[in-house]
Amino acid sequence: MSEKSSQIDRKAEVKLGTEARLLARSIDRGSLATAMREDQWPYASLVMTASSYDGSPLLLISELAEHTQNILKDQRCGLLIDGTAGPDTPLTGSRITLIGTLQRTEDSRDLERYIRRHADAEIYAGFADFALYRMAVERTHMVAGFGEIHWIDGAAFNFNTDSSAALAEAEADIIEHLNDDHGDAVTLYARNLLHHPTGEWRLTGVDPEGCDLRSAGAVARLAFDRIVCDAEQARAELVKLVKKARKSEEK
Image (tube, rainbow, N blue to C red; front, side, top):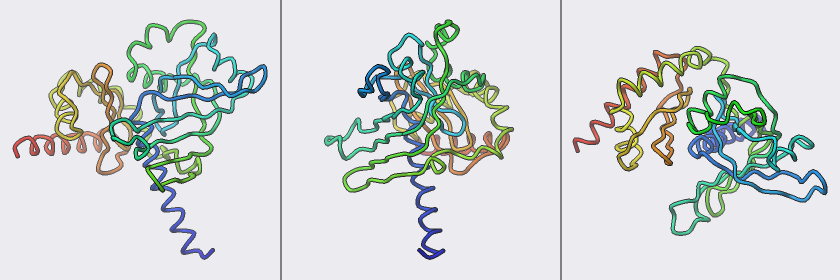
């Protein structure tokens, strides 16, 4: 393989990784596959998910659950994120299967991101048998419709956050400010840019690639037009998107 073709392949994989990460950030649940600890039979279960800053899936699960007992013996797992809702033929929709390992994490920022995504989780997050797990993605199998099937390396799925520490530090303040002082802007994002019904939309996460929204049982993902690295850049992007949303309403 020539250097030129190798570069093209890497560029294509990075693009596919970005698409896969967007899907994972856009959905708040998945089907977790683990190996039964007694006999290794496959076991699938519904889990509620959030995403770490780099896109790694986060799961807040009880040690009493079958899947957690399985993971305590064998950390390897698969996680199906299903984005096929909506089309008349679901198989034309996008879905990804993430393959990797689940490891317990004590990262308080990850826990905050999970609870903002799933407010009801705050009730049981402090229970002794519950813990937050972060998935280290090694490979991604992406199906984006008929004939659009790709294997993606884990490095392409994860977003490099080395240059965005300042934004991570400011995330909670940005979210609080938007929700408390500019709730109308969040609703405009959901209604005019993402075409969701009007509701009590709130921001639940901000990262270098975009922001996460929630209204009752509905979640949405708004991608930025560019990568942002700090609070000032995020503010500029959010203001630009509000203007875009208002302009679309005038048409």
